Image (cartoon, rainbow, N blue to C red; front, top):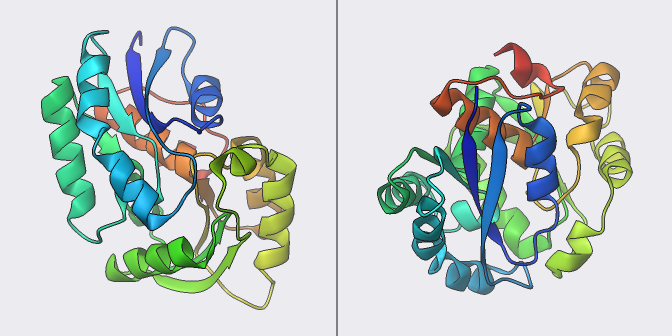
Length: 233
């Protein structure tokens, strides 16, 4: 399928675009519009969200077929309902289907029949607490949540997929039974190691970008190149 995918991303995000391109079919192109963000704090994310609709409107000038708001904590910041409202606002602005990462993750975990999850993030405590609360409100049990304590989003973008691999292996001990593992943050490089982690842990492992791409692809009717349990859903 030939499609144009629009990404609304924080200005300091250096991971979403290359990971989405890697997961996109050959004839599909990825186009991004950016919102100002340097530090991943609740206040900065809240301020950033004010630019979301303008970014979606600009992407509509490229006649994109679908929009992804590629920011995890930015789409769960205000709790249940904000994610769906954000999708509706972006869809109206772009004149195309829209998904927001937080709700895409929720849909992915539901599709995998996951009830108990382990979460790893690059975030500091403030955002980890918001993420835990969001997932619990969505009906999931969070067995463990491990964060790296990073606030500077450029520093998050410098983490490698090997860093994600190591963090997951360290943070998800064998004696904690979970139905899935979630690697959070669209700026945390992790898509290349999801399949290996699934083989090692013997449970589905998803990331923010993988879940968002899977969700957008489902809306638009194409199959993304995702090396994770989501590829079979």
